Length: 190
Image 1: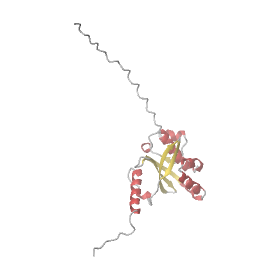
Image 2: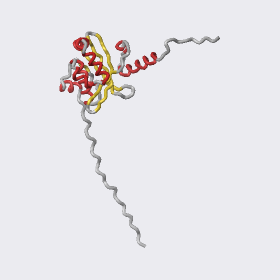
Image 3: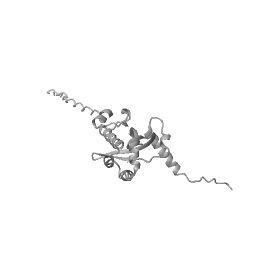
Image 4: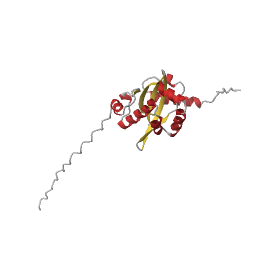
């Protein structure tokens, strides 16, 4: 019989996949501050800044509005509840006095335990330090900031190099304390 010739097909050469697009370069804090004319009292260390340019811009513009006392720009960036508080606050002399007294706003960003983006700011106002933690999220091109509860004497309780994590640990501690019964009863065996 005839020998069957097996045709060995050469594997087709696949075109090499295109190289991945270059990672968009994240703008430095200094570049954004210069481009957007961010108030110079704002300090956001490069290593504590958000990973994306968009988040960096949002955080810097948010605190810039604070530094300048620009309630009109600040308002749309706040959660509904915080917006109402801002309206009440701007109606008092406290707002202007506080804004006039700001010498520095030091910011660090990171993630909250449940993954929310967080920005912690320490406002230096007339030599006093006022810390405030915010969660922020982008919704339809707008970034909205939502203030997180501030436990008492918070500034004295912040130490180390991860204030955002520590803030949550202290909140957990406060919640645990709040849930304790007012009095501990000793049950005596009769």
